Image (cartoon, rainbow, N blue to C red; front, side, top):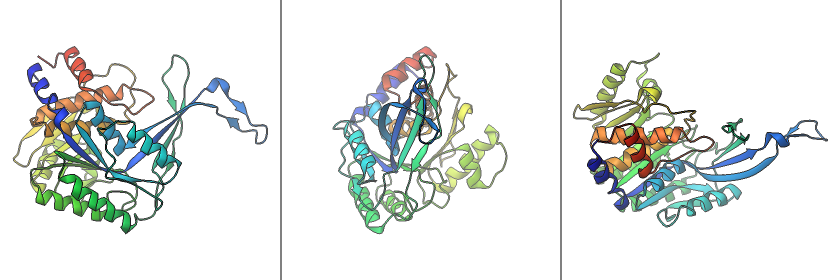
Length: 345
């Protein structure tokens, strides 16, 4: 990519408004000093002393964190949290992002618990943090219709204000989170009324059966959706992506970890980019969400298919080298990495 083109695209980010519909979690990090470990006098079990607690928006909030880091004009979260301590903390973390993250379409309700990822970390001087077993808080019952109604109304109102919408379905059990069948149908209706609006969707359970949208998925999700077993070659992934794009009439983006990314359009265009070489220890948590955020922003700014892939791959490389946190990438960091790797001319 030429330097002038990079600047032309990224300079448009500050004019963009992006909606984020999905499961917002609280990422709560517990930083443990193993040097202060004890044995409980009562139970004789190990005691882990937490020296610092930090929280940040996670899941769909990770996408929002990336949008803020990219400097978009406004990011509109559409989701819910509980009226509990974690919900209070999550709303504070969202408000801390500043005026570019209005909470007009975010719902706090006593009908749900706040989706929380609690991540204990062993922190030793001079060493990368070591994550212990995670403690999750989730909802396991269907999302009440009253909450769905509020989400659908928010989506309809938000859609008239934005340049693109990102959808992230993060829950393990269908119909228990934000992106229920009724919400998906509402997004489809928005897509039909505004066919020019980019709606980029990702679901950890796969998007089989969803109405046509622009989809982003990893190669394992693509294989599961198409009934394929075993490892797939890059040529097979490209062919499957092209077939899927033609079937849906929309573009599709496939991430392949160290093998890079492939994108295909309904018009038959296929592009592939390699991953950026590793530069040290990595933590892949959040890489997929950074790809989603950067694809949406780049495409909304007018990037061509390959340009969007290049920018997303660069951002993901920056994120995976941030240890002990779910990271983000700024335009300035992306430019520095691209210049260092001689990908900007």
